[in-house]
Length: 245
Ligand SMILES: NC(=O)c1ccc[n+]([C@@H]2O[C@H](COP(=O)([O-])OP(=O)(O)OC[C@H]3O[C@@H](n4cnc5c(N)ncnc54)[C@H](OP(=O)(O)O)[C@@H]3O)[C@@H](O)[C@H]2O)c1
Image (tube, rainbow, N blue to C red; front, top):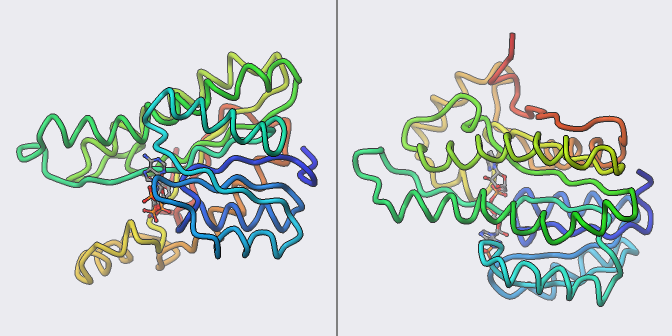
């Protein structure tokens, strides 16, 4: 898809990977909706606008179905129909399974998986009617191979993979693509909480021997958004951490 002038809604784009994705789309001439639960800082909107793109901020929790619908409605009112949705917002809430409360498990699923469903459902009908659209979901290598302390997170991200492939099959005949990116360890607030010892151990397992940069993920997202003949795929952007046979 040609990105210039297209409207892109990126959930969880006030910092980290989402902010880098927003900047990459803005540099490609697309209009941007920034989102997060907290109020969107005006400086973030100005940074995007400086690229020559239109940019609006719409704050709200994607795990709330009604709110998700209202956010899409507001974006459409201000910019027009959403052409590309990036389901990026996500949280971790790591605990060993024996210490994980039902609430710890549910919160992760509610945001990472149910939130992805909520936002997708509110844009998909219009995309299918227009016979054009792209949805890109952020999964994780944890969802592919599991991770100690992340039963909730890994379950949510594995769910995102199944969701992505199902939406891809349902929407393909109407020209809408749906893909996922599975990042490995990327330097953001989410991984900043890991101790230096854990970070060292992680780097030893990564063939490319470093944490990824947010731009590494943004580049892969742009690649998928531009290509109308890739759908139902999960692309690992992880320095070689997970290699499929
Ligand atoms: N960093 C990594 O190593 C890594 C690896 C694999 C996968 N991922 C995935 O990549 C995505 C981005 O990760 P990141 O590291 O950039 O995270 P981050 O730095 O923690 O940023 C998360 C963003 O999501 C927003 N957010 C969180 N919950 C939300 C909700 N319920 N509704 C709306 N916005 C919400 C946050 O804003 P507020 O705080 O204002 O809500 C923030 O803008 C996530 O899905 C994550 O699981 C990351």
